[in-house]
Image (cartoon, rainbow, N blue to C red; front, side):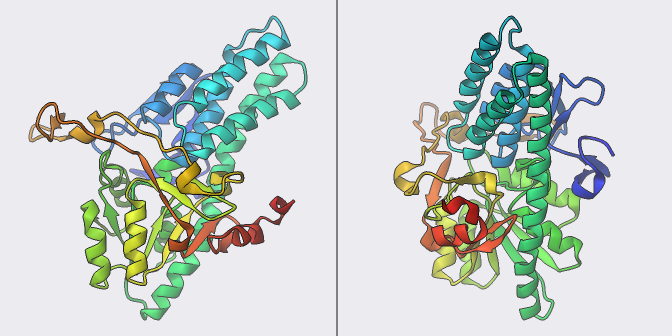
Length: 384
């Protein structure tokens, strides 16, 4: 096996198995990522050698998506451990804690990032006073986080496949049409993905499935990433403008909606995801179409209660709204201005979908209602 994972767990790029993040095959002090800014027109592996480079990669979205951001934080903490001073345990701890705070500040909305920084700090603390042992623990911890992310996504894919299979049976084996928003595919995680995991599992099982892919302005992750990976895997799909979903639903062209999430409140079921998800949920509710949210348990927030009032919503630079990049007639990637120069723009990266609009949550432990009681039915150890 190559590129970070055994082939039965990985997605393919032109027949080659890849994860989105993995250690360099010849140098374990280097972390390798797929630079997602270059897709779909260029597939490029980027090498990261410092935790500061990892922080830039997260903030500037060389890597993105809840699970991958969490795994990147895990590897970022390993890089911080490699760079930490060795003169004393106190100096080592102070260094990695400061690096952790900087990593957490890069993308404040996704809960996975904070959780994995905290987890890595605890892993190093538990390793004892030997500093080399702490570095080894951080490396093992980062690999464990990545492996867990891939396995949880594989499991939730199997649970979600059953939902697609049931719709397929009701339709007499006709094509099941799924609408998805943004990219919650394997590019958003270490492998397999969340929203796409049930789709891949159904497709691989021979169930006829077709995906309507929202372009997902302003960064166009649907057009650039979801369409790219579905195409590489051979899943039939159609790219649509963001505002098309409601029309498709009104005309019976969508059987279910599946999105991922950047933070789900375990106590209430509120879902925070890419901006525009809320509007898809409203349209689905109005047309009696099931709205599923797929997530590994690392995306649960076990503290907050009210998503609209409490979840911090990242506001990004206006350039992402005002400019768009693409391939020109000469095969060159160019960026062009969409609006009059000097036009002000707002760029909220996420919105919150209230639990009342969500049919069910799909997790690695099964499917449950988007309620506190529903979540605890799958995670009873959290009830205390």
